[in-house]
Image (tube, rainbow over all chains, first blue to last red; front, side, top):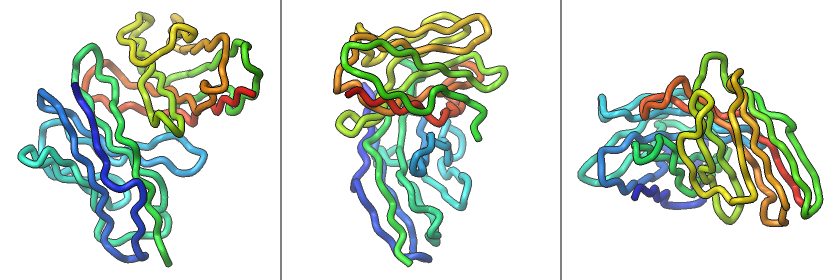
Length: 114
Length: 114
């Protein structure tokens, strides 16, 4: 069975500081991995995805994530936080069992201090 | 704007009632997924349709049902509603049914059961 763990339900950073949101997955087969962002009262928007090509994946808004098989991790980073990055971030895993449904982590709310 | 539309945006109803949520996928997308987002359960996969056929079921209650019509729009029917069904219901669509396909999420329908 697949699962996703996001460490830290809340992460607070200063504007301009490094953003690091942690995601670990469990999967018996090589997974596809995704990061989505949810702004208040909105749907989910894809930031980036790993689908077994390059292990370092670049996404929108300056975010990137690195797939590390040995650590079963897919942490999301951004070198310099902006106030507009304040949102909830979800890591998700997908791999065919009966479908390519997304299995989501519990989410991390990013707070950006001025 | 993801191109996925959901109606209504908000729905307030009473226990025991039945409601229908509607989703129009992005033009050309054949797969439709339904997810439920609640405070206690997080984001959970409910059901997937592909080109009119049910592809996979997740943690969907027997009181809930869905279908995808020939024009590819989908409806999620919730009956005998309980207080615990209050949640945000998302529809997502993708081009095909492949793990590499991005799922594009609609803005959601917020259901409140009183």
